[in-house]
Image 1 (cartoon, rainbow, N blue to C red):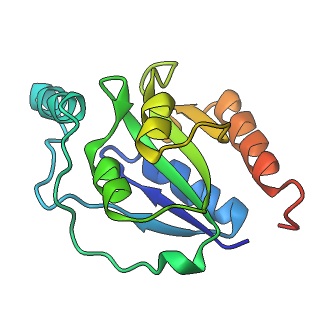
Image 2 (cartoon, rainbow, N blue to C red):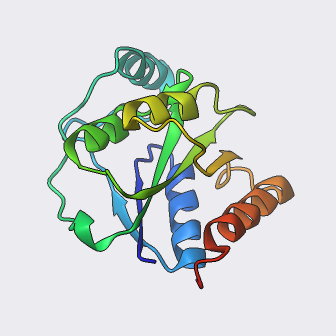
Image 3 (spheres, rainbow, N blue to C red):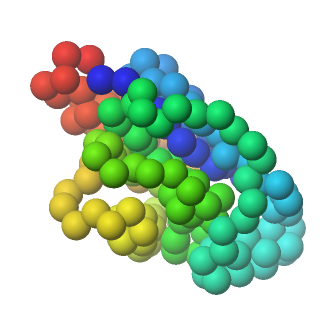
Length: 164
């Protein structure tokens, strides 16, 4: 089953997760880049990023090329901003038709919980059933055995019965 991992990462934690998963699953990746970059340090990072997330903004993205028809599975990966997904991922979801795709969700956070990120993602996607999820805490910045075990279990769940 061909898999695409779509992600946005500001500080590198979600990028690390996406690349690690891609290597483990033999998946392709698509990095989302907003036209107007978010501040990446200091108070402005939290103010502008958090406001953008809470206001459910959909920033314009740098052009990318992807043929969604060639992917049966799409994994959406986001940092947790103000308890929800990062706005660039919202832009992607609104732009692309993901109907009929097997979906999985990944959230990386500085705290211990993704908050309502998965609920918000499922609502935005129009998904009512179970979707595999993976929550990581600072996976690049602070590697841990818990993150490694969660990654392995997530990959095992996705590959069970698929032959990959």
